[in-house]
Each structure stands twice: as C-alpha cells, then as structure tokens.
Image 1 (cartoon, rainbow, N blue to C red):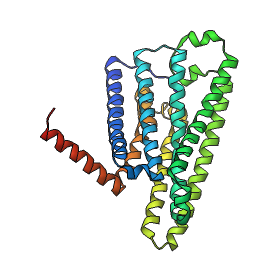
Image 2 (cartoon, rainbow, N blue to C red):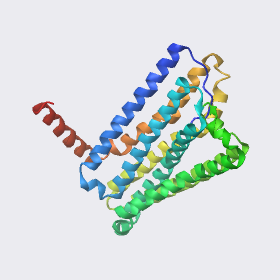
Image 3 (cartoon, helix red, strand yellow):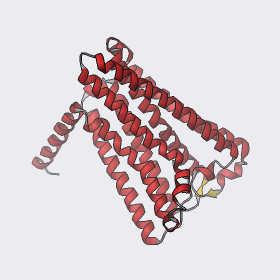
Image 4 (cartoon, rainbow, N blue to C red):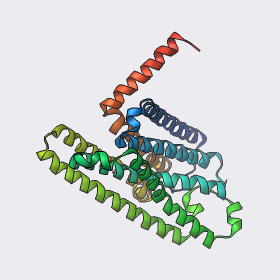
Length: 305
C-alpha cells in the first residue's frame, strides 16, 4: 500500500484523478466479478485446486482494489480520519496486499506438483487441502498486521485511537518499531516467495525438456513466469517512496502527477494481470464464461425485465 503523502492538487486535477481511479477500480472489479460468477457457475472449477487458488486470488484482488480505492478517495474527501476507522482500512489493505504474493507462490507450487509429480497431484492438491491452505494464507498475511497492532497498543495511549490523522500507514503506525517491523516482514515474505517461484520455474523448465506432454509443461512454465512478472509489479509498491525520491528531482514541476502515476503503476495495474494470466489464457474458463454470459444475455433479451 502506498504510504507517501499526497501532494495538493487543483480541484480539476483532483477530480480527474479520482474519476480515473474509481473508473479503473470498477472496471477491474467488474471483470473480476465476471470471473467469480463463471467459477461458481460450474462445479467442475470448485473441484480443481488450480481454479480454487486462482479465484481466491481474484477475490483478494477485488477486496484490495476496493480498499485502495476507498483510501485514495478519502485522502481527498476527508483529509483527517478517525484513527480507529483508518486502522481497520489500512490493516485490511495490508493483509490483502500480503496475501497476493503468497497466493502466487501457492499457485506456482500447485503447477509444480501437477507437472513434476503428476501421479501424486490428485492426492496432494485436493479441494479440502486447498481450502486449508487458503486459510493458512490469511493467517500468514495477517500476522504482520497483528504485530503492528500489538506495537501500537504498547507505544500509544488509548486517546490516540480517538484522534484524527491523515489516513496513511505512516500516520496510523508512526513509531520506528513499526517501520523496522514492516521492512523486516516485507523482506522475509518476498524472499520466501521469490525462492519458491524460482525453484518451481527451474524444476518445471527441466521437466519440460524431457516431458511426454511438453505442451502442458511449457504452459505451466509460462504461467509461473507470468506469476514472476506479476510479483515483480507487486514488489514495486515496496520501492514507491524511493521511486518518488529519485524521479521527483528530475521533474519537480510534476510532483503530483508523478505520485499519481506511481500509484497507478504499483497498486492498480498489477491487478489487471490476474484475468489475463488465467481467465483469458485458460480455454475451459473462457469457454464457460462465453457460454454462461451469452446464455444470460439471450434470456434477458427474450424475457425483458
């Protein structure tokens, strides 16, 4: 989540930026909503761990987009927000943000098992175990925020939760201990995810060279590689302050636009990749989506409301 302080814009610029963010957010969530409806329209998908993990990623991204969009609009509409309410939004945003790379790692592991351990895939990657794994992802994603709350309770008086501050993580969790904990947790999480992605990609790459079904192995390898690209875009959020510090001196007259562009690049655009990686590339999913929504459109035309 972007923690940089917003630069004051003119009314026209602020209105235009908020319209762009809200429209993009609704478009992304509308597309993802279609994917969710497609998933639940056929029981076949709910029995496949690959699709279960994918749709969880989509739902998580929808929630993150909503929270991020809300925080962005709030920063213009009400510059000062009650700490308690702001804390809830920031924590929800951080948890969903942490879950995205962990979910990508889980999807890479599932593809690794499917290609490199095909005889064990049906026993290991069952729907029940996948649901348990998703619960574990939420526990892991929430742990850093739980530590942040404990540190906040130990370092701030109760009156702090009744005060009003700009709704950014740096104001809600202001102590140095919070900053150090955030940095450490991000390094640990991202290092773990990158190790998993690189390992699974290399193993699938070696398997693809000698596999009988090279098409499936090559597709899995391409999918894991796309996970890496998506993860790389997600990681840009961690270096947002440094990007701002580096780029701003070069174009000081465009500070506000630079901050807006970085926010779009690091928080909004990576969420467009999820539908492309699976929803568009997966033939079963695309076929079911076309059949389901084509049928709905025909019914609406025949029986107008």
